[in-house]
Image (cartoon, rainbow, N blue to C red):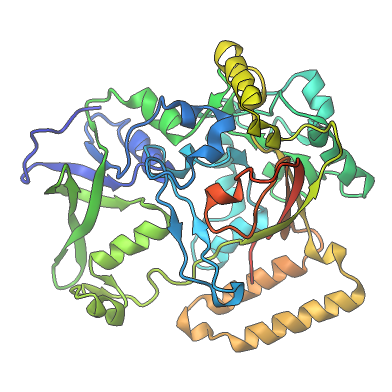
Length: 463
């Protein structure tokens, strides 16, 4: 990494990348393999690559809603949720959300990826992208004991990565609930059908985590894609820098991004891009920056006093998410859960085990999930009712607002009605979870004196 304390407004880079999360760091890594290409990477958060709260897997939930690590976005009050504000944690550090998530490596289905191509993105289909799902990671097989306990026999070595930057592994610390999870689904007739990397698997399973089993530390975009190349002289990093807008040049026939304006240490600065500005600020802030730069709905931009450069009413619209709910049950006496860390002595013991020998509960995170077709749980009457609901909601929507929405609705419907697609996600947390809470930290807060097992339920793609 080359520091930039003395740059002036006249200095330029071949590429400027806005956002030091997964997308931005992968691009920075790949582009700077050519020593003749200069790249400036601008990240709003700090470089916390060695922060114990980030690298320790078992401390993941302590990062949420802490402004040091998390943007802590929230929705407006939701009319149909009794005014609840739904929190959306997003990483505000080098590494982005990959540095603060719960380390789950749960792969998309073939239908989810093929949908991109069907929506007009040529070659963005599963068969084209499958090699890159292998390329990004290195899979580490667990011990024989863990293979048996977590029923990891579904893993296909040929589908897994062997030399990628992100390290993936199964937890070697797991209790009776983790073992019971795949057993239960097998007994119910929903054993894992094949490796999720195949693109079409269903069943209950223990998923891989982005944890390096050599150190039992989090493996994320910052440690995997930035750290190994930080000394490249053509890669320049600015952290703690808030991008305000992309500066555009209107040539008459086209609009070209030429520079980036940002604030750092209380000062407004500008850096020029000779070739391209690559906007990698995430699902919320990428469209926000487009709008701040004059690309978006004319009505919206004018209401905020922003000069309209390109009128595009679709910017920032049609967000797809998978809201989650669940049920919690008190466990029988003697069943260990994460709730036990309410006892300071348990926390002290876990920290000592991790720091001294990299063993114990802090080496692990959540690891139990199931991907199942919704229609598997419906009677014939239920399937008819589902079809009626889909018909009704499709008729009430206005595809004209988005050119591709008719296709989008058809794809989503086909996934929901498929008997082989994992359209619903069920997860298990060996901990109490407060689904009524708005903030992530409050969802995971241990406020009840009892120990719990919670099931999380979500549609993979809400309609």
